[in-house]
Image (cartoon, rainbow, N blue to C red):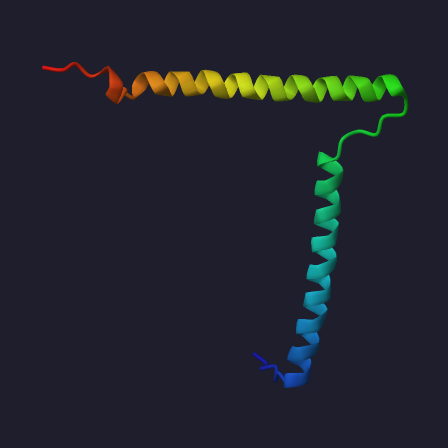
Length: 86
């Protein structure tokens, strides 16, 4: 087996190239995620109205689901005000 000698300059250069590659990959990942979660561009006024309506319905649906889940958990935990006095 041949042993490779490492110098400080070689290590420093390798670290710099790896840092550049990591920066490029991070930028690419950020662009991909932004593209996935960005709302579609509406070309007409009707499309923008439909998009706003869909957002409103999604918010309403989320609030109602949260309220239903809250009510279910509230039934599991007994309230202090409903205790009987002896």
